[in-house]
Amino acid sequence: MRIGHGYDVHRLVEGRKLILGGVEIPFEKGLLGHSDADVLVHAVMDSLLGAAALGDIGKLFPDSDEKYSGADSIGLLGEVCRVLDENGWRISNIDSTVCAQSPKLAPYITDMRRRIAAACGLDISQVSVKATTEEGLGFTGEKLGISATAVSLIENK
Image 1 (cartoon, rainbow, N blue to C red):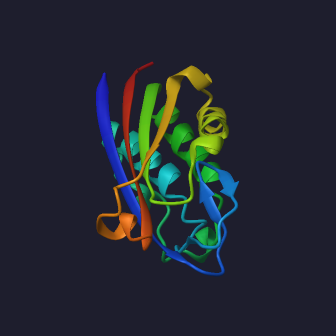
Image 2 (image 1 turned 90 degrees about the horizontal axis):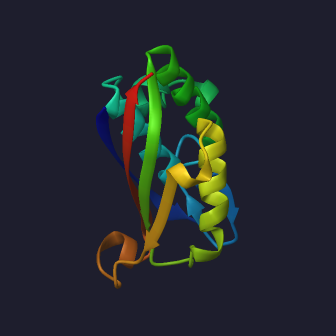
């Protein structure tokens, strides 16, 4: 068994959709990035790749490659899971946390868990998504951006 940790952060800007965990969330701002900037899915992907010692999403999906411009991160997560499978790994579970002062994410958590689980070929019970504010502190608390962390446990098939 191996454990991997992932972290991602993106700036909130006007004129972009807010996508978290593969779910579009109504909000006046979205996350800036080369792909859809889904910080939650990016953290999950990095935790999985890290656990398998297969690098990170920048290695697998470089932002210098235009084919990933505006990419659907849930689709990229499916590719990460395919790479893990090819390398003899099976996902045991994923635990993640999104840090955002707003919007409130509780109504979307189950859908996020469903989307991540489906992309990974997992049961929803194997995927945890939590959300927290930072009490107005730091860049997330000041509503300048959103961050996410993830921990994954993988095992040999």
